[in-house]
Length: 419
Image 1 (cartoon, rainbow, N blue to C red):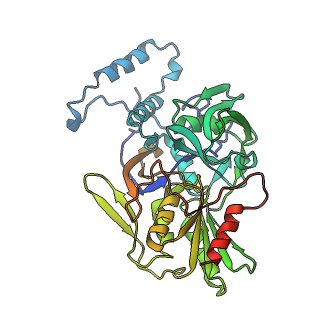
Image 2: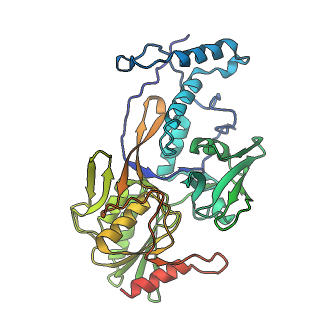
Image 3: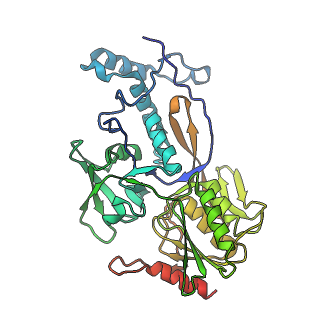
């Protein structure tokens, strides 16, 4: 066997992540659709690996004989030797090991999948524009991205994904036993190609199909508008907590504080699936007193870490504020919402949030692969765990899709004006 670089599990660039989902909005060039023919392609660029059968001293008690028996049997008996690509088989084995834990948010990502997630957090999108997670152990839409093909087609946060079809790939599969990576591989594809989602919506037992055309999408993570009769209320919409979010938030805040007449703020995290926990803490620091608990990281066995607001001037401190949440508000969105309510009594307006209360650490491995590991659960400052339950709004307002206008935003304007 030819010597090639070894796949080493050397962790780099460790950050804490509370991203609910993988974005299903990417395409690959050179005519190669990732996941269509497995991981192997001349365009995939996956590195070769050296198979070393020596068991590390710390793992001598483990019996890998069955693994190697299966490996050797495949090498000896499988009819199409061109499919026996070692890097693909090793990656597949690692993915299976991580998946065996049963946590949908802990996952091993081969290099191209890992690049997708990193691009996502840096705001590079192309595709159908949906984000997915698990709700009640069923794959579900966490949020459609604003202006995306999914949103335009009427896909809603909370829709259960029960099947995926792609005629070009000759795929029609149920999602019952599918993980996020498998769904990503099927849904992702080149611009102007089509994929069909089979959905079930709350209140309806019958599934329905939505055909989506993949498109290039560019979505900023923060958008600022001024609302109300006098345009004296800042409406700041945070669409995700990515690498660029804090910079975009800072620009929005500078604009707000330059307008002395603006003394009320609506923070809108509807359909925001989460992202970096640090970004949520940074944003909370603009409202809270220094060294106020924002989120509690609970590792079990009594090990807890309190993450507090930064010791810096809170640029929006003292302004009247309310928050908008819905079923697509998850993870970092719930961290921010929970902290604002627990610490400031901020009213949450809308409908129950998604309910994702765990923290992942994204680890970059050698050769560009990645590993997301659930390292802890998180609690609000008052020790509430939202996982599976979400945050109930203080003022419940459902968005009526059959009516024009944004009823939830209008209620937020009404409530913040009354403070």
